[in-house]
Length: 459
Image (cartoon, rainbow, N blue to C red; front, top):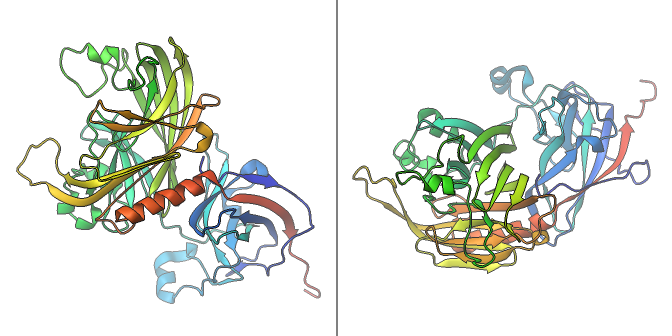
C-alpha cells in the first residue's frame, strides 16, 4: 500500500557510503543498515512516503524498539532543556550527533503480531539519491507527535470510520461514499467529532480552526466511491453497494441498505493509527446487485503532511451474472463547478459552494465558500476511462479497464479556500498533478549494506 513501495535488495559491502555513526545521548549503536532512496522525477518531493517490508531486512526478527531511522543529512537535535526534560521524562529525545532521527512506524498489517512494514517519509530533491540508515539497538527515546489519525466512532448512533491528516479528513456516513471535512489550521480533530458527537457543519462555532464538513453525499459518489458498470448496453448505468434491488423493495424511501442479513453490510477495522500513516479497512459483504454477487476488502491510507488518501480495493468475491463487468470510482460534481480538469488518470471538480446543515433543521444561514475542490487519481496501469454519470446528483467517474487479481487502486484528494494549503484553484490543481506524477513514480529504495561499528583501537 502506498505509492512508495518499490524495494530492490542488493546486499554486499561494495558501494557502501561512509557516514559517521549516529549517537543520541547514551544510545551509541554498533549495527546499522544502509539504504539508498532515489527520486526518478525532475521535481523536488516533500514528505514522500517510503515503505520497506520486513522480509527485505537482512535481519527480519527485530523488535520495534530496536529500530531507529536516521537521515544523516538532517541537522542533529541539540538536546532538550532541563524544563522540557522534566516535562517529557525519560523517553524525551536527547542530544544527537551525525544526523537526525526520522519519525517512523512499524505496522502490522495482517494482525499476526509481527510488523510487516517500516514506514517513514523523506524530503528529496529532483533526481536525487540519498542515504538513510536504520540503526539497530534498543532505544526507548523519541516521542512521536501524531500527524494522522484513524478510528471508528459511534456518531449519531451510527458506527462509522474516520481517518485524517492535519489538513483534510474523510469519514463514511453513507456506506461506501466518503464525506470530506477540512480544517482552517493544521490539526487533528476527528476524535472530537466522534467522541463529542459534534455536527460536522457546526464545529466552527466551537473552534473556528476546526473547519467544517465540505462534501455533500446523499445518493451521490460524494468525495469518492466505488461502483460497478454491469450494463454494456448503457455505459452510464452504475451499480453501488448501497442501492440494490433489496433496498429498493423497502416500503419507504431510504438512504440506507435494508436489513443486515438480507442486504449489503459493512464492517470496519482500524489497521494503523499514526503517527505518520493511518489506515482504515472496510469489508463490504453480501452485495447482490441484481446482476451479480460481490464482496470486497477496501483499505484507505492517509499520510502525514499530505492532503490525499490512497485506497486499495480487492474483490474477495466477484461473481457477475452478465458479461464485461468493470469496476469504477468517482466523485460528485461540485454544484457550481467552475473548475473541471479531465486528464489521463485525473479528475478534478471544484467551485464555490455553500456549506450548511443538509437537514435544514434550524435557521443557520449557509456559509458560502469561494472554492472547494475534490479529485480522484487512477494510475495508468488500470487504464482509467472517463464516464459522466448524470444520475445521483451528477458524478465524474473512471471505469477501470484493467484489474489484476480482482484488485485496483486509486487516490482521493480535497482542499478548500479556507484551508492553510492548496487553497486556490491553481494551487490545488498543481498539487493534484504533482501527486499523480509521484503516484506513478514511487521512490526507489535499495538496500546497500549491513555494517558493524569498527572497533576503536585501544578502546
